[in-house]
Image (cartoon, rainbow, N blue to C red):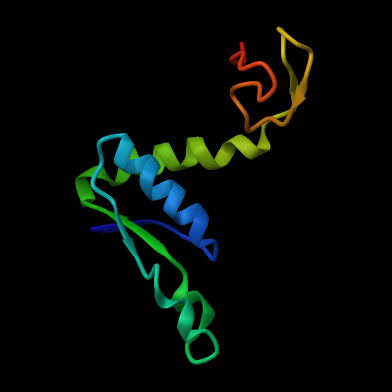
Length: 100
């Protein structure tokens, strides 16, 4: 098993775990319930982690990079309705048109 993600945000970890599951991988979400130990244990030891079998690690890392890297993309304007959207979005929230 290999750890492919760790971070302070349990909601993001849950989302990424589900993303990997939907892609057909076998992720394990670890440390999801340890936040109650805050103040007693080092903070980074409490962060949720996503682990996958070693043979899935490369594909999992690529999927996570694709998902997490979207925030760095430039904003875009919907060709259908003209709504301005942040770069991480692939579909217009206003009209449902997909980014082209």
